[in-house]
Length: 432
Ligand code: LLP
Image (cartoon, rainbow, N blue to C red; front, side, top):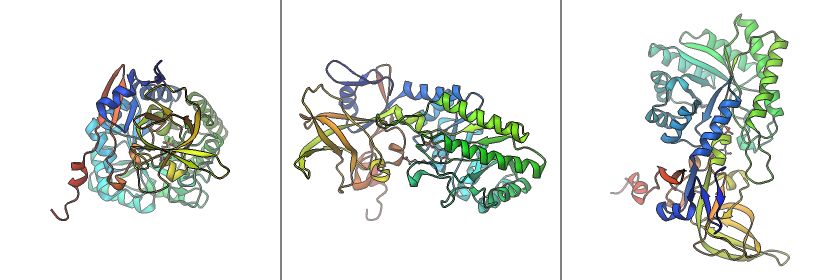
């Protein structure tokens, strides 16, 4: 994050708090969230996309405090489950600024969204259109609806997080005609108000051409709908997915550049099609919270393992692992790490940071040159763990999920506390 720096003793300081002090107070491992950095990134998107509504995608990381920061910085919030909605409710987040996603929202979740006055619900199937229309009618309400469409774009990212090609579960296909049919049904439904189309092409995307192609295809459908219904839909959402740098090799997108590019395409296409420009929105998650957090771990053991050809690799085991960061194992994600508790002048050695779980794939950082004198008790910091690490954390092997500690102006504050064994055992009610 932007406030991170190492002092003369080699101690990594974030938000004015030395990580050695942070661990002494809060324990290890811990997620460290740089509040100023988060707010600055949120604001950067807000300012760059000033003509847009910017929905922070809570799935990347959400807590009550973070929801409040999002509201304070003038962003809206994208939630995708009753649980995320519960956090928004507890934070007192203005519900008209919440968008509700999901390909299989339950009856109860939809009813809760309607009762709460959630600003918009993004529908993802014909079944859901019928279900939501019935629920809204039962509640005596009108639900504002966006139709999630599949733009048929091959986004260059990991298969599991690409969402705009045809053969996957999300959205209505534009090419098959399903999207147009979904729009017709929403428009005809008595308790639904058609607001616009929604497209999200995937996550951790660097190449803006995917967004361009998607925007063109969605606008073409937007125009077709205008011709058929005789009215233009007021909104359009182009989703999230903006990539961040995990290692020095990545070249992240700059919000201002993205905004300019996306706006130009939309303006150009609307002019060509003779359409008024719909009110645009986007849904960045990772690009806001990803770089704002690091994970700090304590080294437990260091083991030299011989590789073919005579080289060797230092396996550095830390006190967490795939339960607090599944992304390396699941997406083959690249992370880096740095010694955070002292300076070292030792020669670097090829290392791999692994966790304490019972499987060999429990890798946090695949390849990193680490100081040759790394030893038990040293602290390592892994940057860029703000998105989809705590939110995808598990209790695998009955490990306790680490806390999220916010740092700012030299002070630290617990946002999410460390789990306890009591937390773990509380749900185990089979044989008391
Ligand atoms: N909007 C929709 C409809 C989404 O499905 C997502 C992410 C976003 C916005 C936010 O995307 P972002 O700006 O954060 O890339 N667990 C995976 C990422 C899954 C993304 C799911 N949807 C990972 O760790 O890479």
